[in-house]
Length: 69
Image 1 (cartoon, helix red, strand yellow):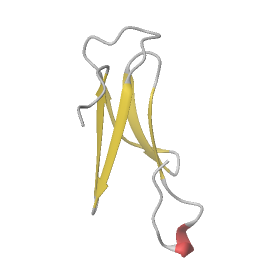
Image 2 (tube, one colour):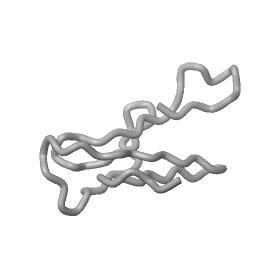
Image 3 (cartoon, helix red, strand yellow):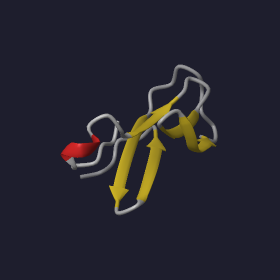
């Protein structure tokens, strides 16, 4: 869940998640904003979901390999 820092918007936010069919989606207030299928996803496979929120843009990265530090 990604939320605004404003105290007046405590009940709103964005849900970013991945379904077991590989689909990644972004939802706000029950409205689907974006969705995409992960190429080569295998059901039940563990994957890493990274969400970056900058300004008015939310970007989701999905992968099975942990990022290098």
